[in-house]
Image (cartoon, rainbow, N blue to C red; front, side, top):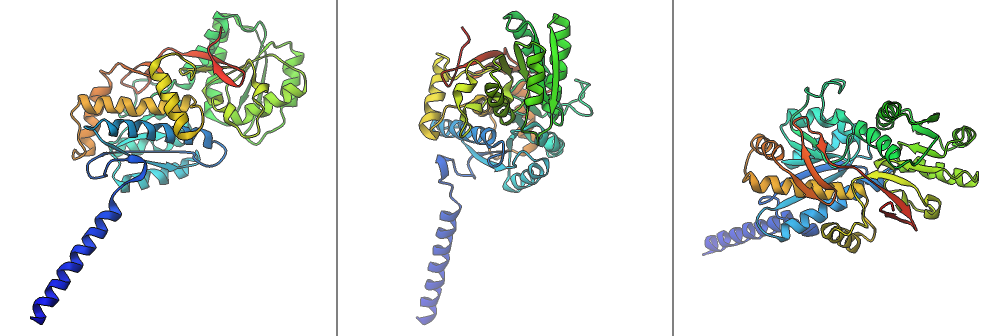
Length: 395
């Protein structure tokens, strides 16, 4: 009898431990599906540091899309987004963490420099990846990026590439007669800014735009009085800024102090400037941004996204958020069409996703997108202008 009692106690303890273990492994965070049943989406970006505005926008919007998709039933996703602070070394560490977790699909990285470091790892491990905001061609192209036929094949972009932004910016300025004399201020120690600048200059020459001044800076710089004074003295009535929002806030503030009021025209790196703590949005009145997304668009899908994002996160989504939202939904379309399930191998999932993405015409909150085999997206760019502290359609 004593022996039987002991056995019962052991069995009950084992049952208790199993129950506790099951409870500890369940994922109840943000309405995500159980890891065992769901396809695992990884990704990384700067959720802390100077460019946290970008990484948090991507993380939040991707989670919003995952929650909406999971609520539909059927295909289920679970998201694991790591903080890499936009640093290539930390992005590589994040990649290892995500692989240990069992990543099957990925948003790659938020920033280009970090993404370039891990692109070979995605190819090596046969993980399908689509970056929402990494715009450097080297995320999808091998070597020096000059051969568009030498590409990874499993890494795609939702956003414009840097060269395309430079060309489209020159086209937009020319078509809309925004400036008769143009100055350019760009950051010479990051590929993003240099790449956009180079293509802008090529296209500006082709279009006959009058570039009267070119100024540069490095990441550590905070004083732009020399560049702004030179642009003003050269008579520039438009200043093209292929830069990130951190330095743009310095430039706009200092131009305002100088009473220098040209048209400022930026690209996607400046999106997020209105969300900066302590920045007076009135100083950005009239600033143009080349972007595929406008939060004020009357499109019903855009308004749904904006409303849900504002409700959950208390802010208006920027382009980075919109692109991330579209990435998850584009993945969802491919998963459904390819009958992809969580129990498939990474190789099989990757092959099926590539096959589907190359035949997909996807319409999301950033417009209609199609993809080339080299991973680059084709979509129509548009511009927004800042008016009364909000992004609006140019009139």
